[in-house]
Length: 376
Length: 239
Ligand SMILES: Nc1ncnc2c1ncn2[C@@H]1O[C@H](COP(=O)(O)OP(=O)(O)O)[C@@H](O)[C@H]1O
Ligand SMILES: [Mg+2]
Image 1: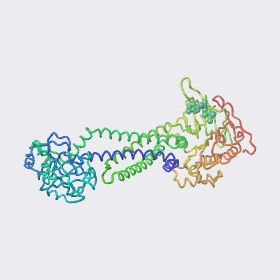
Image 2: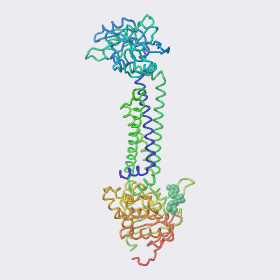
Image 3: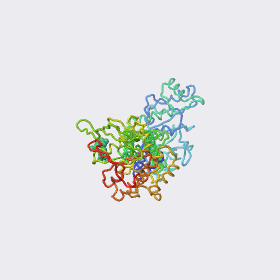
């Protein structure tokens, strides 16, 4: 009977293709939107992940990583003195305007790294050496900064621009995760950062720290919090805090949530509708099977088999197409697209649920079906 | 051979069936009494809309009746639960419809094999037996054709093969010639009589096509919801 079910499904090629297209489209839409959404979320916390340090310490009222709340300079030493802290270094982070030699101005994020260790520096370098930051006036930019400020003709190794009327010379180009705001990032040392920015009472933005080996970061952040009164977060916590903030405050959450949900509902509606139509159009044939002695349980099994078969085919195609899109569009990290297995599992579960659901509607219809229909 | 002393294979008593409710309720069957014997071919005739199909559906256990009893091969069909009825139908009955009702995606042989597959016979054996059956209805050279590539008469032959492949004790045909032209209708009736009729099977054919009346052994007239007369048909060569 399974054989008959599959033949019925594939035999009507036009209907099968329609069904498959509907499902494929729905799956593609959901996976694509979901992955873009997830990619954006990853981007929104790239200011945390790009620095790749385990613990962030700052003002306890901090909402997200890009909103800097300066703390007293003494905080570095206070964090260092907390038991369980392996090391702690200062980080400067602030917005500044850069003036290029062609006269253009660009808003940039200046990131100042502790000069002896350069902790928080980008993990990958495309050109030059990060260590050259220790040279006079040296700064490092990332590939997105190059792109935003006019491309490799304008920004390359050796390029000189002004930060607050003071010279900055590019010594390396790093490779980083694109950020959500895509404000160009300029790295320099902590001390030089302070020379670039106008004098303020408090200049320390963050203390970056690491727990001693064998101690969980969560435990050490709790100690830092208790002993210094500062806010201390693991990079994971801080990343999520930032993601949540972006979701809540930018409308991205609502917008994308709506798109994904709509994609879901529309896609699933298309899928279940087409599948239902498929069954209804085959009602007479199912009626004939019933008249010939096929039990309702067997008919139900046949319908479920049909639903899952076309459902899984649509899933495979949809995910494949979405991945292809992601691969083509997001090559090089220029578009946010992060396809996680969690999303794929979730979508698969939803798909199976919807297949079951639309199959059930059809099954109920079949169970109520008078096989006498075949005499008409 | 239709000896009234022999117990009837199908026995209907006081069968009543209405459709709709309230003001729109119509009583279609108003107390049907009918016996059909093994080995005979009974024609059931009457006006269009008179309830012939309704009666057939009831005899096949496809339709619940409001009142009365139906026994088939000694089994009180009208009292069986729906599941048992479906199973019983699959094991003992074959159907031929006006609209053929073939599965469009299956080949002729696969269509004929369906009743065997329903009885859980393996596909290979089922299709083998289906091919033999198709040979008996003269379609041995069309076993791998899809229904849409065959003529109406050929499709009805497939349906006949399908109805008989299971060796049913009761063969039920509802206007089997209505979708066919005259000569093809005659051929189909000849075929049903030839391969369908057998000593341990009863065949019921519903029709309002007077050109095929002479194919039956007896002819029952359904008028105003009742069987008002049953005539034996004199046929030369009928044992
Ligand atoms: N499922 C149904 N619901 C309502 N009315 C029905 C149904 N089946 C048959 N009828 C009505 O019962 C009457 C007899 O129908 P039917 O048995 O098909 O007649 P025949 O086969 O003799 O042409 C018709 O008036 C038809 O409209
Ligand atoms: Mg009828």
